[in-house]
Image (tube, rainbow, N blue to C red; front, top):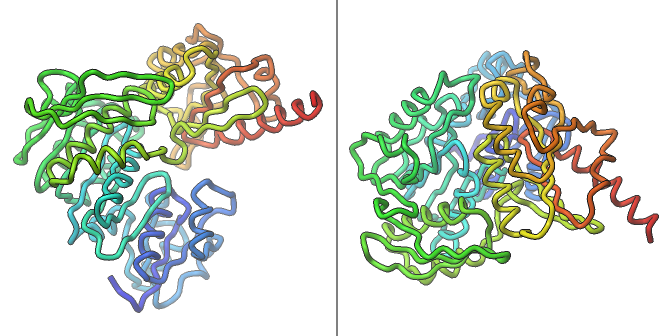
Length: 443
């Protein structure tokens, strides 16, 4: 790390990039960056930290910068191109992260789903018991002085997590996602097994995942779950409208009863992984209980607000497994209310590859609405549309447009769950505006 340079982030509003920028800022380094003009949910943290965010322009690049390039941008990006031409130090996001975690007890959290929620939970819990730096995929980052732990979200996309070599790893699942890169489940497994052999001390893996059960690695693998074959087990799980309680056992030893104010079975499992890491780092279990009970969640994961007589939930879910977990959580918290899903499919390749699974998961809702497919910088078009998915959904499937969200006004005293990894929030805002005007008229 260099105190004389300015760390310049190309694509600073990216969720991982903004978190990394905040960590360096906290550590006292000079930080700035560039991105698109459009407002993003990660922007507020950068503004509050006083980090300068510029519009993309190759004129921003000058001597004295160390450039950290977001993985969404190729080497042809004008700023990255100029930085390389000038001979400035240029790192890719994941490469820089690999250097940054050295010197700490590092814990990487990976999985096709659940990694942001688990990283957030682990960061919260460990921060309560020891100085902890962390990087969460919701744009949250903190660089704590003299930190003992460094917790970070390890992204399997394009095998980026292979740039990191943590002390411990949590693996929430191995599932086929990112069909624009991975050829199938065996390819995803190969990436995780390669990473597992870079872990230094131990791996904590979900026991019900058949792929994780196949892991061959030189470090111990401890499985967590609800069955007798797991090393860390949750028993006597009680789920209610206020959260969940459960007993935890490790190799027959009773570690106590734990309470979380989170919803869905997946959050019990995420908590188990956190408890397992803390156990091996000899953290007092009573402290862990206290911190778990105080955790409120991360951004864009089951984020709720009430408007008129409706409950509106915003969630990043964009894979069938995530949709299932989110709707399961909504049912737990609101067992007596109608659950309406509004889903924005994310990328054409994922929609084609997982079409039947999407339909099956969405049918867990009482009524389903879709938006058009959100294309990405990597994929601007494809041979599928939301209408193809709608045809497979038994519980509806009407396509909503941002300028006409009125079909949602037919529901009262219900729960609307907006899900997607693109810009589904613009549909949410449009609906909320309609609802606000209607409430004003009624009053």
